[in-house]
Amino acid sequence: MLNHLNQKKNVYTAALVGTGRIGFSLGFDKKREQPASHTMALSGNKRIKLVAGADTDSERLSEWGKYVKGAKTFSSSTMMYKAIPTPDIITVAVNEDSHMQECLAAIAAKPRLIILEKPVALNSKQAAEIASAAEKAGVPVMVNHERRFATDYNAAKDYLKKIGTLQTVRGELYSGLRIYGKEYEKDGAYSLLHDGTHLVDIISWLLDEKLTNPVVTGIFKDDKGDVRNFSAHFNSSSCAEVTISMSGRSRFFSFGLDILGTEGRICLGNGYAKFYRRKESKLYTGFYSLSRDKSVHLPKKTGYFSNMIQNAVDYLDGAADLKSPLSAAVEDLQILEEIKAALVTA
Image 1 (tube, helix red, strand yellow):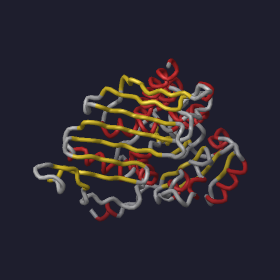
Image 2 (cartoon, rainbow, N blue to C red):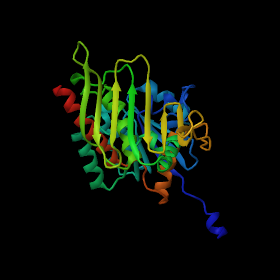
Image 3 (cartoon, helix red, strand yellow):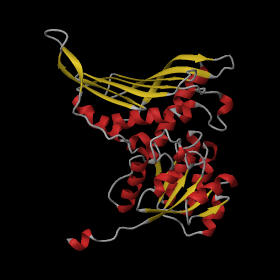
Image 4 (tube, rainbow, N blue to C red):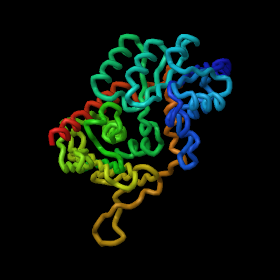
């Protein structure tokens, strides 16, 4: 038994494609919960050795090389794959318009695992090509839908069984970025793709079902014809009403969920997580009200990025399944395209 416990665990090698914001520089944002980038999360795990990075931006790559001591740097992923032994993990953290090209190249290198930034690709056709290539090569792909790994959202998933039969699930995302405009499809610079993927993914994960058949209402377009508001209502086998609403004309950023059951409520989003249970009312005789459940204690850090990397390690150890598999992320993109079709024809 002692020999088993003292057995040295593998250290997995990793390479990073893309040393920009999510790949590297967000790790220096003092307001964000850290680690907030792939570089910091990978290098912060004792079971991972970051051995190489690639980026076409020489200045960014140089800064990254100074930070990650001992790692080799390359001006392209092609050069990197030719020059070094295939790492255990390849992380693809480039802009959306390069996801397919870089993920297919990573698959061809045949690592033991690929970590791909969300969304999977610019459209479902590209996503299907990635999924097909990954399956043929036998290379697993995990997508960084970060909320699946956060302690607050995992607490919410566990808490669902305490709030009775689900009545409504409402997701909201407000920002100043256009929700959709046809001219932005070439680079993915619109909120339905960039942020909406998180919204549909976390609801699908919490409910353990794929959202289907969206009925899109409340569409508002600006004077350029870009969509700035909409709501989508979905069929669900577990809840009578599932709705997401997005705004692209707000002067703030907000992401949140409101989940109402017959016995309680969950409200959570960026920077907050509140859990409520049915209790005898302090306000009205003979009535019950919702009361904050003070028995739920969450750590100060959600661990959204570090937990994602730990899931990768656990998967390579054979101790866990991938918590955010490619198949689920492809389904998310399909849902977004159904919504987009309704926005285009409105």
